[in-house]
Image (cartoon, rainbow, N blue to C red):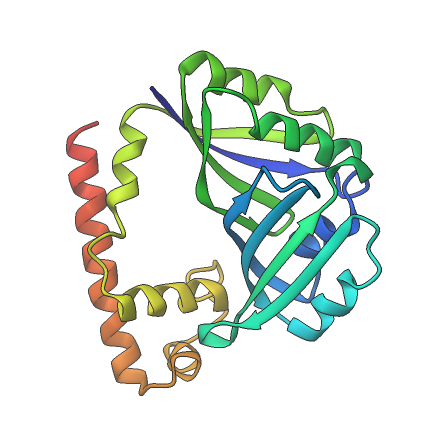
Amino acid sequence: MQYLRMTARPSLEAIPRTLRLLLASEHVARARWISWNLSDSRGLTVLLRVAGDRGAVRDGLSDAPEVVTADVAPAESGAFYLLITLDPTVSTVTASIFEVIRRDGVVLLPPVADRDGAVEVRLVGEPAAVGDVVDALPDDIDVVVREIGERGLLSERSTASLSPRQREAVTAAIDLGYYDQPRKATHEEVAEALGCAPSTASEHIRKAEAKLVRAAVERGRWA
């Protein structure tokens, strides 16, 4: 069994409007592919959690030729959920990606994160099949392998110890850019998104960070 974490940066000119909107639009700060259905007869159905302008995203998708259906619903921390079905045959790049992730012997791990024109992807599967996925991606996608091996699977347990509120606080902090360099959000802004006092938001973040650091150190002991 092999684990792979990679960053894929597609050529924006080669991908359909929906992916350009999610990857490189001023209206979207961050998008996460939470789950997907590859067996939908209409194409690829995906549930995403998006931090951004819900109205602008909905308008941008309204006449995109690759969109079969699209629906939005509010999420916590000012984000929203997007349930969308895409026709992968509209673009050669999306058609290639669709075929790659349907390959035998490979599982795509959620969430898949979109930001700043790139996609963070994690795979697990048979070693040969994982390698074939990377080789089969089209030339319009620039791929950087960040991690490969078996021990990367240990990181999947990193967030398991977080309480729901701690997870929500860290998610809001990430979506708002609290961990960006340079930092784009404050404790006060995270607190506003959570609907709590700044001191409470700080406590949630601090406790979550402590648990995540411990998990990272424990993982390192196995390296």
